[in-house]
Length: 346
Image 1 (cartoon, rainbow, N blue to C red):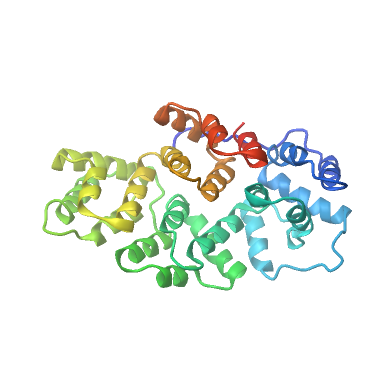
Image 2 (image 1 turned 135 degrees about the vertical axis):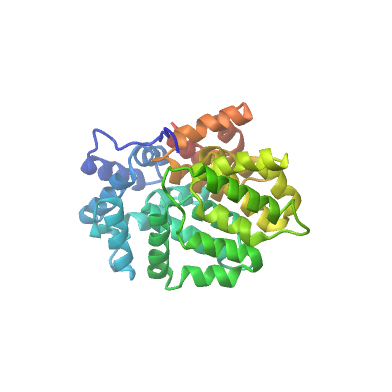
């Protein structure tokens, strides 16, 4: 919503041959020139990085046994979705080389940059549900900030990449009202218009009040339906009317009426509806505050939002926390990983 600005643009003087030669040189011999890799990949668009992967495979055949990715249909659809089709994604030549040369969070961030966005998203969705426990915050972050078309692609590509059904995995890894909410998000039924119906906003605000503060207990199904289906501008008007009606801000009402994972999910949806870029700024701050750092969240947001609205997220971060995102990253991260994130932020 609004005039959102990215930090990464297609490189005007893009020369794929020069790029693959520079990357090849950076990975050959004793040691690896990580800065050279950063300088190239942090200044190329998603589409240009895919061209680099294809060209690297065409030029340098280091892998004796070529291993074709089994999910051909998904990759084709992903490229069509992004506006280009490049079968070179089927060969993991450059990825294999960089896996050998790099390590740690720096490696994870570089590999994230080499995936088409939809492929990276479904990998993150699977990782959030794989193993003991489920990271519902990641599921909400990805699903509640995606368009209906994005969600349709997630479901298709998730099956092709993992040979599993996304909706079935979410139903199996969550329970109760959280499962109902995430399943509702996965239907991709949100109104994506910019129209506001004042009468509907009043009805929804009243329904939310009667489902929460205005009754004994909480009717979670009403909250879930409204938050998962109304367009963002409609929700903003609904929240204002709710506050006039109840005298309580919607986030405070959610804080008082719900608990645990469901509370975090509802608050995330409200914050996305109010200001998606501020929501991401909060996620970044939470990833860095306290003991330890959630590097996976830093990678996911900074890499994935770089061509959409990362510049605006930076503005929101500075306004909210009175410190620049880049300064926060300098304090919290280190080494090549820090240099890469700072380069993407520009």
